[in-house]
Image 1 (cartoon, helix red, strand yellow):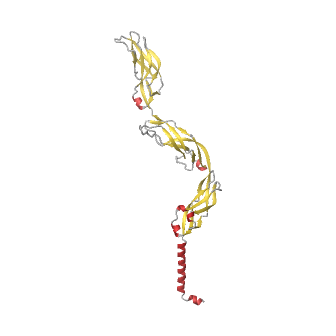
Image 2 (cartoon, helix red, strand yellow):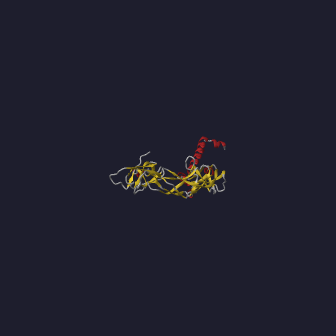
Image 3 (cartoon, one colour):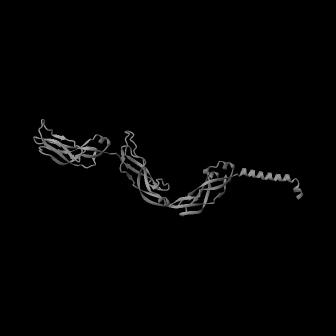
Length: 332
């Protein structure tokens, strides 16, 4: 028997090798294999918790028809970890479930997955109420300033993992103001809805924080910027001194006033008048406490009260004295 097997043994060995190779080739064509890396999705996270970290992906070996494997898309196979029973902290050895879309289940088989289980770290979510502040993304239009903002609601509910909550420095609405009116090209008041975000100490957004409501209504008036100017005070003197007397001058204490207002209004204002000081029938100097009378659009920042002194001297007039005199005082 052995003698017969050894007859032409080189040819027989070659035949066996060819048969094995042919079988492998046919097997590979009929049932090819491929390896894919699939990201792991964590599902059913318990209420009050948030995923902080988890095993990122699983290595899956698939077998099946070459036509099915060649046309396999990323979305045709999924990997999930069910965290329904997980607790705060690191959860080890959670089973990984791999699934193929129904259309390919009869054509592709899952032979192995590495790793077989995954780790998921959960962190408890904390909640607190925070005041909303305004952050202006740019300066107000030239010649204007921002007024006091009205925010509705002014308080929101912030939910975030414990580690993130400790990093929240402020809760803000980023406001981009000063948009001109299309009809007049003049800046208009800010009035609209803006997203609310949580920021850390460096001003970066904390993406793990959830805010409710996510937007607030903000109204901010634009106020014309005021300029400051110093002008002379002009006493307003009315009436005629007694016969044989004349008005020789008028002054005020203080002699200057500081005023504020819109630049165009201040450009037209050179003096500030006082209330009328009547010198009718006077035979000597008159000193009277009175007040300043600023024109519309001008405000006094140095006080309204002044003391006016009117000088009356003996003298002869060749023309009738005026009924009222406005005398601009010289600065002291």
